[in-house]
Amino acid sequence: MKKILAACLAAVTMILMTSCGGESFKPHVMTKADVGAVRVSDGEAITYGMKRIDVEKILGKSDANSMDTNSTSYDEGKISIFYRLTDESGHKLTTDRQTVAGVLLTPDAAGYYKTPREFEPGQSAEEALAVYGEYPGVRSDFMLSYQYDVARKKMITPQQNNPDRDTGLLDQFIVQFTLDGGNVISVSMMDRQMALQQN
Image 1 (cartoon, rainbow, N blue to C red):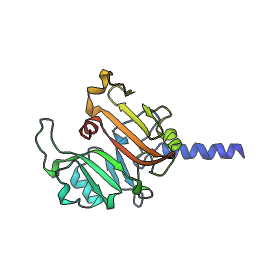
Image 2 (cartoon, one colour):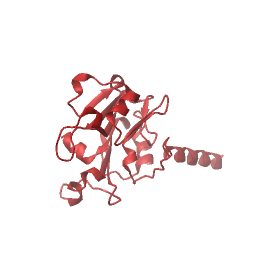
Image 3 (cartoon, one colour):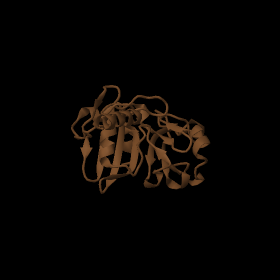
Image 4 (tube, rainbow, N blue to C red):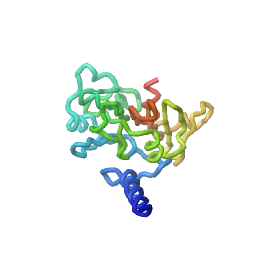
């Protein structure tokens, strides 16, 4: 019986570590593929760098009033997409050139959207730790937060005096879980440049 249980747990872990697109994920190692969402009903995926016009082919049109904000809500508030609104020179991008820089899965996303690692709001903090890694940069009763530098291939610590935090902002990716009573109520995923714009 123990062997069967161990085999089942191993199979579930392998499924959790592989996204619908075949990307292989490992705890404590992140890639740009960690920023995105998959719609549960049909497997349609929103990916980092995807053009806004392609996102809206999947999620539908956004509210016209939110066109000038970098966060846009879709599907009755279940999912929000953070768009890059300016180019490297600071020039405003037209909507057909705006791209995904972040994704937020709200509490209402449970059963509708999941992360590329097959994780949904409503699951436990312990499940998040099993999928994303046991040693997040920030761990409290209210939050788990991971920051990974894909260029340097290492986790970034939250200390303000860490020089790695302020260089290569488009190479640093943050996955953050908001917790309530030991369960994840929302998941945000974005590059550090976009995260800094939210503060």
